[in-house]
Image (cartoon, rainbow, N blue to C red; front, side, top):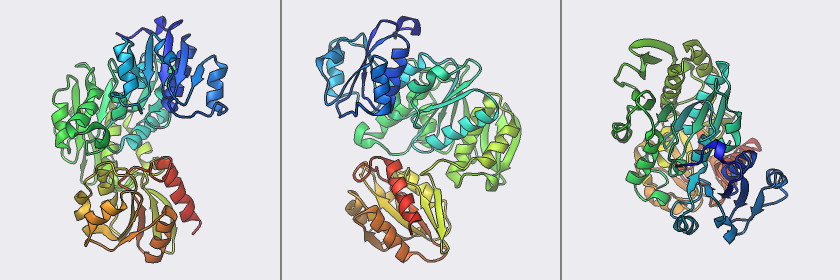
Length: 452
């Protein structure tokens, strides 16, 4: 049983990990009167603005390793990047120290109605779209989680008349106990992060924890297209609303005759034609249906949905048009860090694609992409640690080039491209072999393309 918010004052709290989530948690518990100790195994720039502000608030910060002081705590708040089987966490457990994840701990202080979104792909787009719908409806809205703003850093801004819209990753769900969204959204499930979790069974089980505390009055919005999601959601206690191209149920979302359509308690509502949505591709039309269901189930008028579905253009690094030059479109899809994301990205174009891919492998089966490559790809340009593995997987399908840098791949693509072609950065890999993160990779792509 976790301490109640009223019991935090005076407690000793160790926050493990000084990334975005850890910094947010440290600030939150300090604001609630706890004695906070922030510890990170990496090197922290103590002069960085946010760290300096935490130190001014009386938070003790250490870096470069964990001293024994971390164990002088009533409980720990653990950042999602730290594996649950890490030696430091096992040692804390052996000493009887309660461990809580950052998302779990932040949720203790939430005052708003809560929508949480998970899945292998589309989480950020769907979360941002839901948040924009609620903002346009006039409700106080916090958008946080795995979307660049920690819930810990935002939760004190929540209001009883508002809504918290959270993107939730498998790493965050690994450590939830009482986390309880009124509406949970489970978009899809494809092979990802198997380098950490080992199997689809474990990975899927973690995703399913998003609805483990839901009651019969809550809602679980889930894919009607993904058999694994359907199977996992069958055990949920909550009411269910499916979305897809032909779902069943009195409350669901679907595409009929090219129109995004909802059925709410058996009453159908046509929204807008898919051709008028601001985000590209059939996979994004499914994301739009999921977001629309979440909003309508919290009483947002359909007209607000129609306005936002037309105006919302998506997020950076997700099928982002960087520029069109000499009849060639350059697309930044750096967020596509797994095979399924690339499958949908390639399927979003009818023109010939020059595909730039590669990076750090996540134990992926790249051969799954063979049909899409035959249908859509003109030339493959590979970068990063996975380049040779991908070259073997795609041998004989299309011409393959190997580039030593992202900038070189762009120069090769420019030489190959003809009017009408699409140059698509959609890596199917993590970015950490060559870049700080996928945003850094996408920013570098964008900058280099704009210099052409």
